[in-house]
Image (cartoon, rainbow, N blue to C red; front, side, top):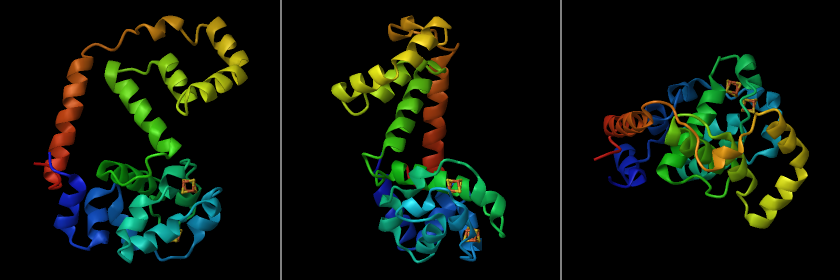
Length: 207
Ligand code: SF4
Ligand code: SF4
């Protein structure tokens, strides 16, 4: 498999808008943005991000590829859909934000330490392995994501919730040594791998 960032760069040659339209979920909508700023004004968190959705769309059209794909902003979207219900042009902003985050990750350009990206990867690996989520391993992975000591602190702070979950059977300690996956988990993994290969080939990003 060739480096997909290099492949994308040679396929699109400085036409970042077209690259986004072809590769990012709902990316074809970016050119419809009229820069009114309603999404940025409606976003409960956007003012704390490096770039609001409105800014990101402007930067895509201006060809600022490195700046867009390296920012953490789209990873911070909480999918509240405030922007979507208010956008006068009806852009699916939430989907574009997640699409941009996913594309930056696939290209290997996303900020490696971003906690949302790290948790999303953890969740994906967890669910693909057995075809269903192992909640105990996922929770422990989240707590210990930043190291052993910090994990112990977090687990201690959340001990009452954890004990409650164990008592009510919502957490099962046997999940640590193994949890029954869904039937045909291996086939699911092969299907997902094949789907990714076909998508990369269709986009000219694979071998
Ligand atoms: S609300 Fe819609 S049209 Fe206005 S800046 Fe945001 S995305 Fe663009
Ligand atoms: S869906 Fe995301 S980008 Fe839109 S308002 Fe909510 S947090 Fe902001």
